Image (cartoon, rainbow, N blue to C red; front, side, top):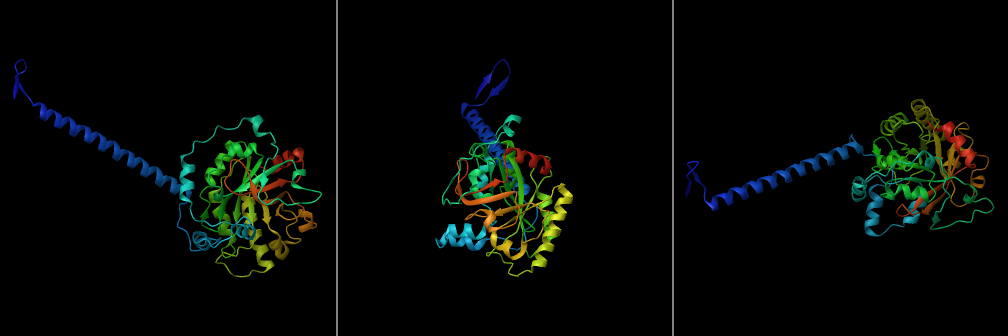
Length: 346
């Protein structure tokens, strides 16, 4: 060892100094790694907790396990599922898509002038239909409805393609939340798109429970479009009971009354032709309707029924969205659209 004459202390050897320095560096690196893992763990937990904070019931409100297994085995026709289930989707979490969205930086909010602009639609269709004399293109205000199945959506681009409004899947039954709802809800607003939320009704659960679940998960915000109750048959559901028209209407009334009291907006009823024919002809004359009619104009499929929205395609294609997307129009011109928005939006 070498002594330092001025300080009277013994200097450590070069080998010992090197060992100490290495040990210190390893400790610092280990500390940084442990801290990063702790932060990541907290973030991941908080993100999942924000999506759903309760345990799920065994109810199957859509094509949950059966369709996933069929797709994996290569025994499913996607077009048949689209036509059969309309707005219904399975509720399994698409983890890769969710992770991609969680990493995305929110876009800059739209300016006031941008939010009041009506964009001309530029959508295409994988299976276009000849609607005759009155087509969707005769309606200037187009929009979309989306769920987790569109994956990560570029909402700014989707708006430029003609999405002036968007209905976003929020809840299903009494304990299912679309895992993309909150991301889509905020991103659509940031892009200047008029947005609303819809609930897929599960017939083997009470209407009050489902209304409370929707209210728990969908914010009450000024300017949002009225909430939507999606009522239809779901052949993949484990709810096999055949409900009477009286029971169907009573359940719907309970659900809609509860939402109207909370949001101060009259809910819109979404339905496809078969369910409408069995249960809704002449019913709910004071509620607005959103009608699915992908093969003919609504006036032919739902004679005598007024409507606010027409879903004219389940096989739409657009930049900004993956795969097929549902396409819709508002009944009326631009002036009628803004009048309706000012009256109906909260």
